[in-house]
Length: 139
Image (cartoon, rainbow, N blue to C red; front, side, top):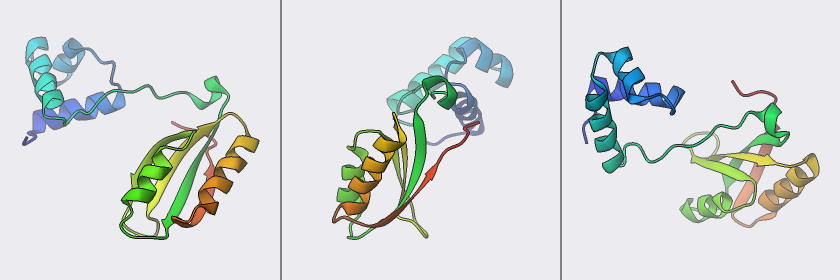
């Protein structure tokens, strides 16, 4: 699917707030509610919009959040990325080109649980090394 300027604007609005109504989006970009609904439905069918999710306020859920920068030991990276994605506490895994092979976003109940997760990641044969940073604030 080719995305025109209007679809890109809709996607940007949904990225900022996935709960925006089609009417609100339409008012913002100058389309009717039904035209916006049709465009969103087509982007969902074409898997441009793969889903919606809640972003949890760190202060509200009292969890420890961190990002783990990972160097993968073996190529291809797919098996390591899939293994990382299946770990308890992992929210997302982003494959990268550059200094790191992946960034893993995690949310766990305590620093002790984060330590265990770090030990699991760092001790696996697919992982060359990792570096964890605790998230202080998400905007």
